[in-house]
Amino acid sequence: AQSVTQLDSHVSVSEGTPVLLRCNYSSSYSPSLFWYVQHPNKGLQLLLKYTSAATLVKGINGFEAEFKKSETSFHLTKPSAHMSDAAEYFCVVIGFSGTYKYIFGTGTRLKVLA
Amino acid sequence: DAMVIQNPRYQVTQFGKPVTLSCSQTLNHNVMYWYQQKSSQAPKLLFHYYDKDFNNEADTPDNFQSRRPNTSFCFLDIRSPGLGDAAMYLCATNEIDRANQPQHFGDGTRLSIL
Image (cartoon, rainbow over all chains, first blue to last red; front, top):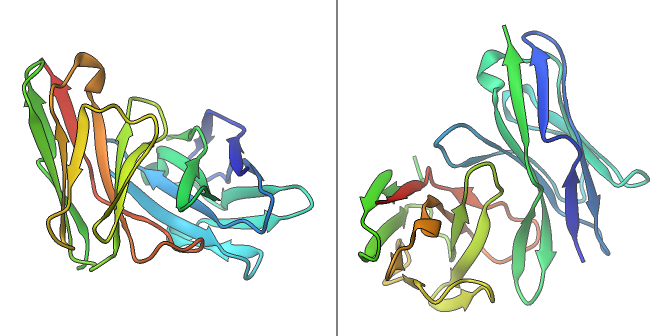
């Protein structure tokens, strides 16, 4: 069965410093992985996706993630945090049980300090 | 811009009074999903349509129903809302039921129960 674990429920960084949000996955086959961001009272916006192509995936707003099969990880990074990055971030793996479904991590709330 | 639109953004209803939430899409996607998201939690899938085929999650309460009269619209009906149904309801679409396709989310409807 597929699953994802987001290792930190809360992360605080200062504006202009790097961001690291950690996600480990479990999958019995080559996974499809996504990162989404959710700002307060908004829907989920796709940041980036990994679907068995390049292991370093670049997304929107300066975010990127690296797929590491040996570590079963798909961590999200950004070189320099901006105040507007403060939000909830979800790591998602695709699971299959008759149909394809999203399996969500529990989320990481990113706080950016001025 | 092609998008997923949810109306209303905020809905207040009374305990036990039926309520309908709506979702429309201009993406012409085959699959439409309804999720329930409670505070500080990941979204939880209630059901989805693949074209006109309805797929209910095993643990979705009978109180929740859905209709999809055409490709563009999908409705969530809550027949007798209880206090525990207060949540954000998210609609999402997907072009096709495939492992590498990301879902596209609307901005949600926040439902309050008095």
